[in-house]
Image (cartoon, rainbow, N blue to C red):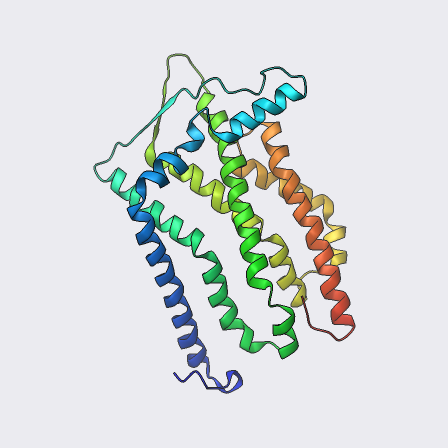
Length: 274
């Protein structure tokens, strides 16, 4: 398909063909980064993945220091994580290596994926819209990476600390399967990354008229319940962890209201911008 074909003259099949090439390039980027990550398995597993299971992990040390600063002694200091990680299937370690590399490929190539998405949708926008939304790729990527870091340094350690120390009987020793451990970390990181995209999602929903600032303000109480539910899903069932995770989500919700107000005000003025 010729790249010079005007967007308004393209047929439905032409749009699908263009979307297919955007998807192919995105997948190719993930594969290339995943291949590089596959080679650096020692760093990815020993340093990144298994970092939160070590009591020397920076988050545990930070909570311990905070506890002592607040006069709580060593109440938040981690003494041990009494569990082991094992692989109980023949292809367990190879499978974990492969899919962890794919996950790393997706996370690292996220800005390029957003770029391909933007290239697909931007021809359907007005020139003024494209100019005013140039920061979209940077902002969306920044929010995603902040969410990933939040999931890795906050959600994951809280979950591992709670579940690793949880016991119903002294007769039971925690032997976590490798896939279960990686699944917990993957869910925490990706869920946090997606949740931190809330302002971007609200921006688009406001642009198409699905939500409004009044709607968001009116449903603050409902949003609080939703936030607490999300926090309960991605964190262990203890109040402290849920509060820690809920705070940034509530802040993002308030930021989303401000964004919705800006979009609505500009639409009322006849402008089309971020």
